[in-house]
Length: 213
Image (cartoon, rainbow, N blue to C red; front, side, top):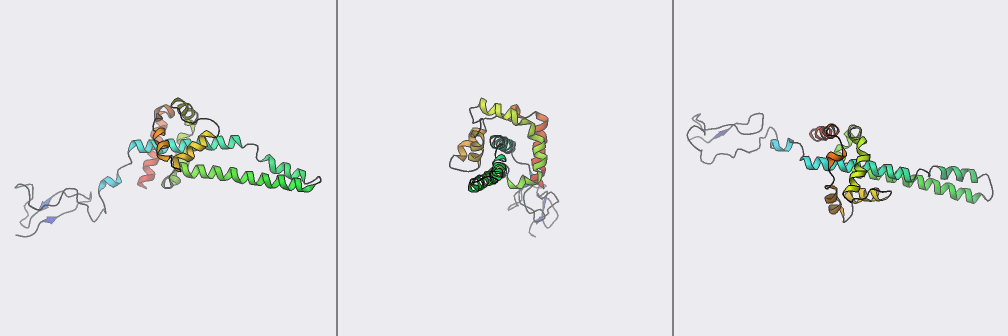
């Protein structure tokens, strides 16, 4: 008896197992030693489940983390809005004696501007996984209006929502020993109270397209 012949359609799954006589396995009971239905096709290199979009709960968490990162960046910029004036003051003090005072203030101002820019970049990098960076502009446009609602929702569930607390919480979501606990607490936030359904669906579509691409 000739060995079974397994055919692989474009879908990557086995539709039929035939014997050397051309008879299908489904015609006369189960074929002994037949290949399981979920065998992967060499043409596709994997099961079709790999192409399915991420779990909705995980995508919602990605949206909330990114939105929290944008909110944290707003807090940092608001709290450090005065920093550009420091190097200007230092440059003005260079006109008077002793000049070392102007140099010191100027150096301090440049340092503060560097710290501010570094904090913003760090928060942005940690709030969005690398694979979603190409669609950040679309994602930002979809969720930007939800920052005010997120602040209210954070307060409702007892999460940090003030001043420096929001940036610190955003950092805890990405790093540190309390990362798992922080992410667990973020799941208490009701994303439907943060974003209108149309905007949330738009953000989820953006993430799905990025995952498939």
